[in-house]
Length: 392
Ligand code: SF4
Image (cartoon, rainbow, N blue to C red; front, side):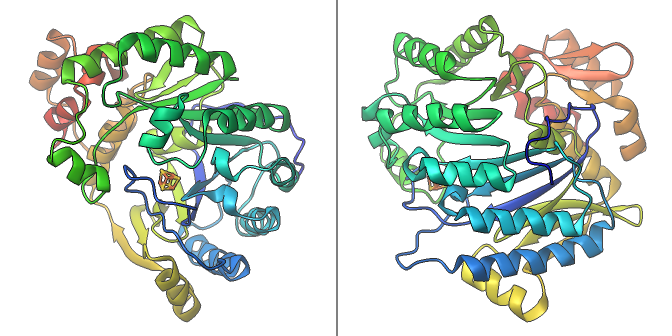
């Protein structure tokens, strides 16, 4: 793999991605429902690499020979991995599938687990894009979110990432309790001034099973009202568009051409191999699309892989209607919308014309020429309802 090769441009195709899940974090954030675990003893990274390689073999048997268009290492906190671990994973992927030079290889990193030397090691291993979990640019809210870093650490990590990687993005969470419009405008503008070509801007959501869930139910956490959240969303759209980084997905903003190639594969309903504890995948084999899912507990996953060569607990063939609904759910998140020719071929039917006309008439949906459909900005605000209306 030529790690210095210039990044390949997006072809507009769904593509084939490989996702690796590193399931460990230094601490559990109180809002997080991802498959992330804290361990107070050192994780045996070599054993997990072996597990990843074995599971790749099992996924390769389902997917067959494919050309990889992106690799994403998410978590958890993948930046807790040693550069040698990352190198071994990337080399393994290249032994299982065809990996052209210059594909997007992203790694998530937390500002608290960043060291320059490790960043250089990841870059040397082939990582060419980093996505930093900054989450807030004020120390009070970082403490509220349970983050281990402060603003100074975050900005240091952003500067370092900008120096080392050809592409980088960072995440912020907004619509936090008590967040005022003017505070968010200031924070967002500061973020934009540090961004290179991509920002992920998510509204805080309360997920069942998290500490925030109980606090929210007891009234100890009060989120902004729907109107306030909608206003913060509008401010976000306006500021990022004015800065030349418009939304290309509900929460993701990029300079045109710098969209996350890997996430586009999910949203365009392409195939991806999901490897590691709690990873999900979509793989086409023999004309059928399979939804794979693996055991979530890291040690149980590793034991399963050692015993049977993979940690899959699900490998279910999806019906056409299920695939069509999934494609709607993912594709309507995108500014580019959905290719209706592909959707019709997948579902074996046309969209319900009455429902479509109703949504278009109320300004929630729009046609792009004859063959594409997308949500309007108003439709994005009620995306779940739009999808539910159009789905089978
Ligand atoms: S660092 Fe990320 S994955 Fe880990 S607990 Fe916090 S939000 Fe979840």
